[in-house]
Image (cartoon, rainbow, N blue to C red):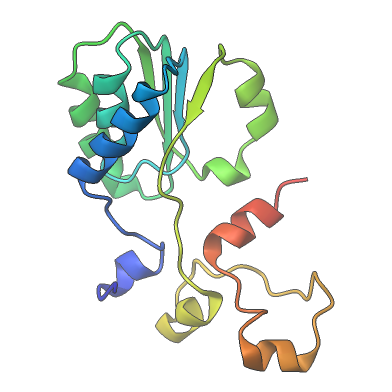
Length: 164
């Protein structure tokens, strides 16, 4: 459970490096060898680190993170790894970028890996967070749905819903 209000407001949970390394190892066991690694929510860089270490033949690595406090940490993590890849670390909300245009420029095969943010809209409201989505009844849900939780989408649902 997240207890730090500033981290909770961004749905921030730092995935342990050991878990990410295990995930990447499982992917590598399938024989998949990506030319591109895309991490749309890199946090402090655990997924970037594990992917760079596991897939040394990757040519492009792109990471996006909304929280500006993590940029230098992720850059430092990536700079310590000997890799031929062109690594780009961006401080931006990937879900508000022109995703199709970015992806169209990247060589395939592509590995999209990461741990998207997850925090409910009601938790954001309780925190008084500025990271709350504009409220709209996009699915034409009834009042009972609000009581049963169906309408309590999380922040990653909002990010995805904003893309055409």
